[in-house]
Length: 171
Image 1 (tube, rainbow, N blue to C red):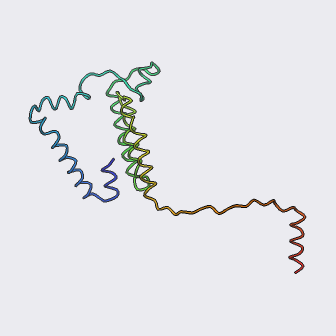
Image 2 (cartoon, one colour):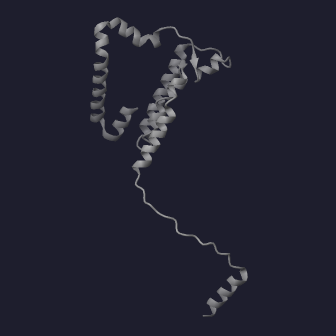
Image 3 (cartoon, rainbow, N blue to C red):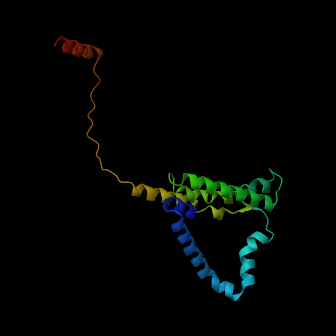
């Protein structure tokens, strides 16, 4: 979602440059572990995908674990999650110029459809959205205006209005 934001705001070249920086940081962090034991690194990274895990979470999988829907397979949940991710990316690509902070929310939506959608996946979403709103509010210029003193006056009666109209028409 960050790359989509950069792509829409700055173009292909900056997006590719930032992708390179992300790849370099990933390599810098992971190379010592890959060097020490490549097979252990691969099995550790792919464990959530390849190891058998039971369904658990607060997302759509709750409908299966509670018995409301028949239990599905992890593959079906993975396909649905992938479709939701692609849909969210397309939606964000189209709406990014108008609502750039929407990516913070859309990035988490596919996790709601996952085989394991643990509550910890969603804890920081409200904080991120709140932070985005605060940043956006502080970017907008503000003009300081003070309300003038309002003195309440009784509404004029119909007779007073007719007199005023009659007096102004006679002039």
